[in-house]
Amino acid sequence: MRWYRELARRIFKILRLLRAPAWRRGLRRRVAATVEHDCVTFAADFRGVLDVGAHRGQFALFILHRFPGARLYCFEPLPDARATLGWILAERPEARIFPVALGSRPGRATMHVSRRDDSSSLLPLTERQTEAFPGTEEVAQIEVEVARLDDVLVNADSLPRPCLLKIDVQGNELEVLRGAVGTLDLVDEILVECSFVELYRGQARAEEVVAPPEGARLWTHRGLLDQAQCGAVASFRATSCSTACSNLRR
Image 1 (tube, rainbow, N blue to C red):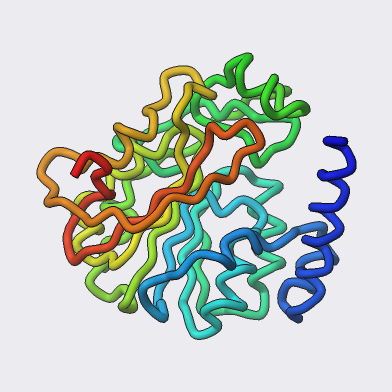
Image 2 (spheres, rainbow, N blue to C red; image 1 turned 180 degrees about the vertical axis):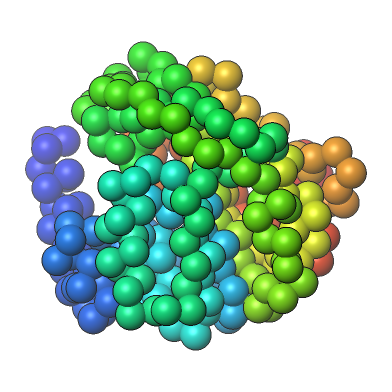
């Protein structure tokens, strides 16, 4: 019965992807827009979007349809994924693609490449990850550049507003936020994927990710979206004029 539900889910998603020209174009490179986010009630008509963990452009395609006037700033360290992302955004010359992983400290780090490379991470994959998501086992390791968002966006004051920050970095979400405390002053809303269980070795869990980092004021928690087959992964959204992710404990 599970295979039937999964097949039905995939067929339904394909039918949704055929609705929008940008989404149909993505399918030419086997890139499916994250139409799952269509149910999110965003708080603004975003003019700027920071896509951290952009991969092949799945979220970028969603943004091109949902917020066609938004300027995209994409961060993706995997070369093959970044090449496809470049093709997806070829008709948007104002979009910027940064060939780095984001974290709290600049330097070089090992990327653990998954067989399904959208599950790749700076953190080693656990057995729990591969059991919950078959086909995501590690197949390679490559060295990538790591930067702080605060350092990359040296002219952050020029970010179009309102601005959305999306983070999907397979367990490294808290490190991204710790390296972005200054930039977050200019962000109006955050959409971050995090986990209630350890899928990557040493990852911060949801309750840590959604608490404000040191030196940051509180945000207001606005929603929770369960995306995982195993019920372990969630998306949290926060909004304020301040510098942190949401705080579920309020």
